[in-house]
Image 1 (spheres, rainbow, N blue to C red):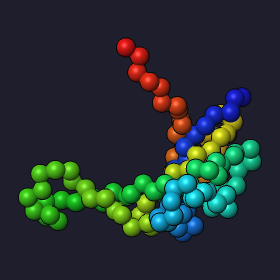
Image 2 (cartoon, rainbow, N blue to C red; image 1 turned 60 degrees about the vertical axis):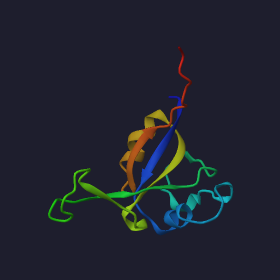
Image 3 (cartoon, helix red, strand yellow; image 1 turned 90 degrees about the vertical axis):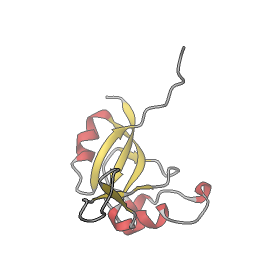
Length: 117
C-alpha cells in the first residue's frame, strides 16, 4: 500500500506538553521521537513540533448564570489537552496506530488546495 501523511492526536504526556507549551520560537521546536508510540514503519515528523488542543469542560446555567453562548469552557491546563503530531505511514497501518492506548485519533493530513473559480 501507499504511504500517507497523517495527523496523530495523542493523549497528554509531560514531554509532549513541555515542547508544546515551550516559549521557544516555533522554528526551534521539534518533536522528541521518544515521546510518541513506537510503531514499526511509522515515521513521525521530527520537524513538526507537537501542538496542544485544549480540552473541553461542560458547563450549565447553574455554573455560570445568564450564559447565552456555548455551554462549554476550554480546559487550558496541559494535562487536559491532547497533542497533535505529523507522521507518514503505510495506509494499512492506520488502524494499528489508532489502536494504541496513547492515541486519540488519526486524521488525513491533506494538502490544502487553492480554490478554482
